[in-house]
Amino acid sequence: ASRRPVLCTHANAWKVCRSQRNKTDQELRVIAGTGGVIGITPIPDMLRSKFLVGDDLVDDFVAHVNHVVDLVGIDHVGLATDSYASGWGVGHRRYPGITLGHEHRWPNLAEILLKQGWLDDNIKKLLGGNFLRVLLAS
Image 1 (spheres, one colour):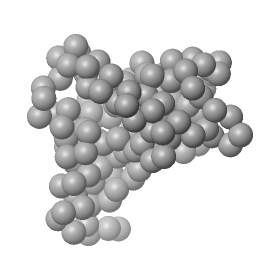
Image 2 (cartoon, rainbow, N blue to C red; image 1 turned 180 degrees about the vertical axis):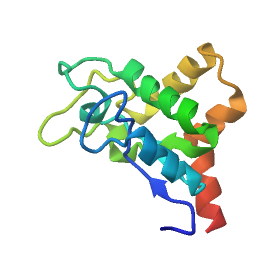
Image 3 (tube, rainbow, N blue to C red; image 1 turned 30 degrees about the vertical axis):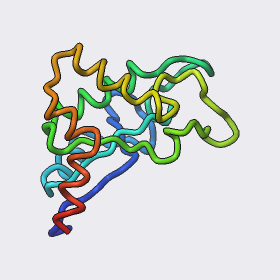
């Protein structure tokens, strides 16, 4: 119903992980259709259904990013780090083994995406450019 771009933070892909907070492909298309941005989050419960504390879930994170980019395009995907980028846990659990668990590790994501063939401009969009586009247009 929005006439303006919708920001849907902390919303990974249901098709990659069936978490209650993740969005279906149809929902992701609707958000993108508003000109909005879907924020992929490193919260472990939204990345993979089963994991061990200490698992490195960066590949799962990248799988969500790539799925949403393939589905709706690079202009509608961003990072939803929240304070988790500083290493807080979900509930009373902490996940120190995640490669992206601290802000000084976020360059790891850019390096992984470059190795996959991503262009610099698209990485900049993912790392904040898309959210800035929507927020500055408001």
